[in-house]
Length: 98
Image 1 (tube, rainbow, N blue to C red):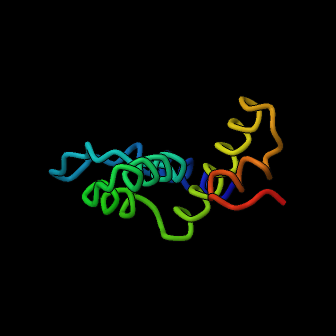
Image 2 (image 1 turned 180 degrees about the vertical axis):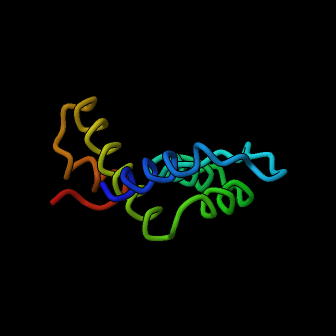
């Protein structure tokens, strides 16, 4: 919520200011995009992309994004397999069924 307010205020306050000789084509990334790139890069052992994704957001935000991605992935696999999320999570980690 505060991020939305900050972005709105920045947009309003910065909209009338000309950029002093800077070319602002730098794209911002959200935590879910960073998490998706980070996890995919980890799966592919792509150290360059891992480092790039880590630089997009704070470590705390990246951790939250990775956790959210894991939850969504387990839920999607559980629905696809018609199993419980707990069973899928244990299977993905190679743990015995409870």
